Image: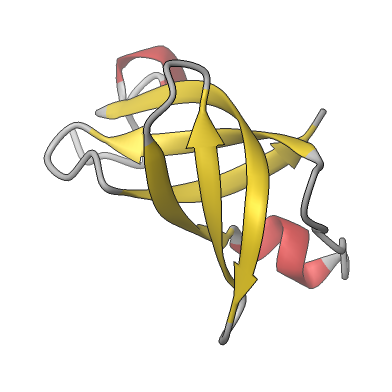
Length: 78
């Protein structure tokens, strides 16, 4: 079974709420997680397709890979 066929709850990502603290070049953002850590995150393809803007100070949901907890993907605004 490939990753796309797998159940969404069993995929290897960690879902965390965060606050955008800084906007960096090339649609990359620095976000502060609930536990106080800062990570870099990029906007997901779905948000980019619908031209959703992400501004510093906004609450977002970030998916973190279990393999690299310093990088993430912004998948939704809260």
